[in-house]
Image (cartoon, rainbow, N blue to C red; front, side, top):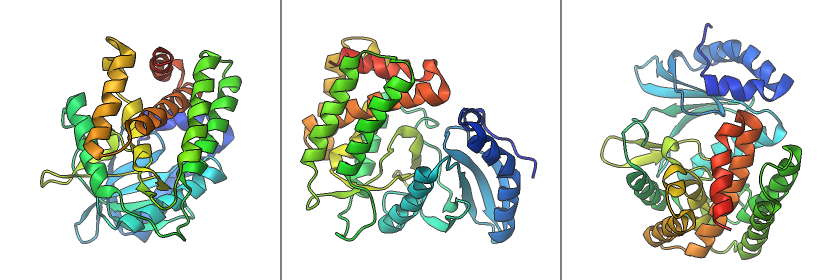
Length: 307
């Protein structure tokens, strides 16, 4: 198939060496195989994501759907795809997109097609934050004790190691104080994890992953799936939308955001602040590594001003 790969997807693939180039090379044949297996006519790709190829599709019955071919650059990312399928099935379409079919061997998903995301709807930052918070409260649900999902403690420990090693790998792109604070917060959230009160959390709930259903409500796509405290899921909206935070008293504005989100969702604002700081630092480093310095420095600057 002759396909149009969005620039951000291509950039991420090429920045990851042989594995990324191999994924790009195989993508047309992979998509052709899925089209045959799921009886799809594949249309235009969506351009807002970076983690895989996502495109409109229509099946033989005329149903509008979406096909996603993930970009698993290592075994951890392949395992993450499998967990995402598990999380979608636990949620069963409540607060998140319905998965119609999946093939972990590719890996790929076929999903119901939703409407535009919050950015495409032209929502301002306050509207985006409020809508995501409301949608999260419809998504969170208890998880069985025998679930196969990673926990908030697992994630916090992984993030501590990632932040430390990536900072060194990138040549120390921010002060050590920022890194030490993020690691200290990771330690605090690890200790705070309580399996008795853990819920299914999305893990990447931002405006581009929040799509209109058509009845005034919204659903999430790209569920990562963890068992953690609800405050963990507010970390992503804490880290995003940096421009209004940088245009003023950054520390106060960031605290105000944490307090607003915590109040809307009935969670601890301290936990929201700490998860938000961790996520901001880890994402800033990840963006510098994969997309270049211009995509990550604003995250780290907000973190610096919040020390």
